[in-house]
Length: 388
Image (cartoon, rainbow, N blue to C red; front, side, top):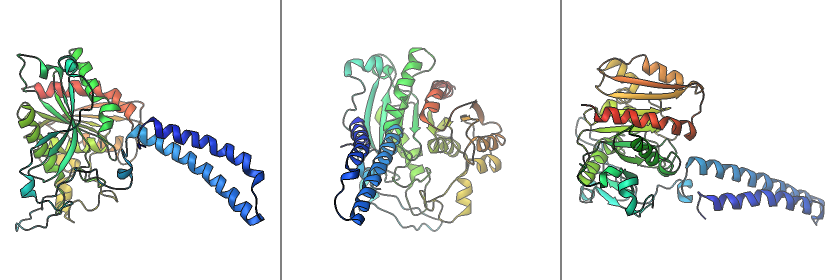
């Protein structure tokens, strides 16, 4: 039985109702000596409580797509996602590589950049020219040695005759933990962009929807980890090159958008790789580096690398990049990663960087809030990716 979907929720719901009823019926009929009866009744109570907890946990996971399989819940990386991690080469040119499968990056460079997987059945071939097409793909990184899954949305214009295929592309990130399925079936990025295209409020873009944690379950915060996975290189160079050559998108016209951790990644990419990324949207993102039990050591103990990885430090101490950024946040989002962090970053912005803000009076750190911000976000990206 799948970890996501109605069957598991129905099963746990029936169990949560049946166990209390069974406990009521058996309470006075438990046989044996007094200690055994006490133990049996305690077990019945614990079973009732456990079934309720499991139902709530499954419902929350089904809503947030935090874990998409039992193997992922157990801490295993999704099969085929990680090929190898390229060694970090320091000033002396020495480094130790980390490989999760025993494959060597030199061999992995021979693999095709994009492999199309099973059809997710978002639209039929007859609908491609009116609704667009969604592809499930595996993207191999020749530079980083990493491999990750993505959903690629090709707009209807891609399939119309006498229309150039040179469209801008946008990397779309989830938060952590989550699944790229949430971007399609919860946030509905393809449908949101399609609606803006049909209303002539945005122009065609290719969407590349991914999770920021390529080496799950570790949260690398889209960082090139010394002696570890080169995740920033994967997103900034490998993914863009693979999509460019496979789908012929417009050269050097890339954007990024994400929620929470994905917003941090989108901001970092546009600030650190302004030669590739022109515009970004951060949906309730944060703007300073973090390190905790999910990330492990990200900078090899280097304070310099940590500062360079911090968007707020960069905008404060380095020249501002010539990019545009939309920052969204709710005034109800407090804490170190909420509205105060957004205001702190905003206070240091200067030209040529252009920043727009969308501050909601109400709303939480959730899909409902971010989905409501997507129409304006799609318009923002379309405007700046097609400008100049």
